[in-house]
Length: 198
Image 1 (cartoon, rainbow, N blue to C red):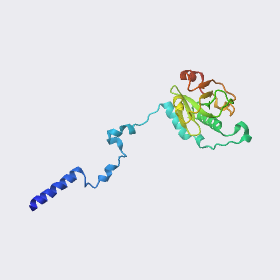
Image 2 (cartoon, helix red, strand yellow):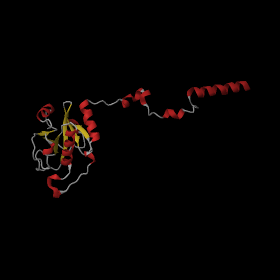
Image 3 (cartoon, rainbow, N blue to C red):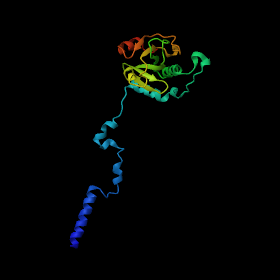
Image 4 (tube, one colour):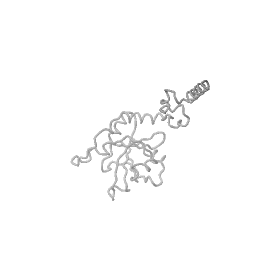
C-alpha cells in the first residue's frame, strides 16, 4: 500500500512538472511582449516601410521644431503675428533648407473668404509619390485630401492653394490658386500638375 502511495505521488509530480504547473519560470509565460513567436500577433509587428521621398519628409518633421514654437496672436502686429499662417510659412522655409518644396493651403468652411466664414486654417502641402500630402505645421500631422474628410479638420470644405507659402498672409493676399471643394469633384492629378510647390 505504501509503495502504491509513493508511486501515485511520484506520478502526480511528473504530471505537474510535465504541464508546467510548478515550473518556477511559469510567470514568464504571461509576458507576451515578444509577439514574434505567436502567429496570431504577426499583424502587430509588421515594420512600416516608406518610400525614400516619404522617409525624407518624416525625417525632416522629426528634426524640425516649428511645431514647438509658441502660438502668438497680437492684433497690434497686423498680418505678421504668429498664428497658423506663421507656422505654415516657417515650416515651408525650413523644409526648403532641407531640400523639400512645400506650399501652403488655406482651409475654409465657405467658398469666399469673409462671406460668413467661421472656420479658417492654414496648413502646408507637398507632392510625394504622386500624392497631394498635407502637413499640419503645429502638430506635424500628415494627411491626404481623402483622410482630411474624416479627420478633426472635417469642418473645412474648401481649400485655396498657395504655391509659395511665403506669399501667404492672414488675409489670403498673394494667392495664385484655384479653390477646391474637397467634398466635390476634383482631380488630384490635375491639382498636382498645376500647383507644384515653389
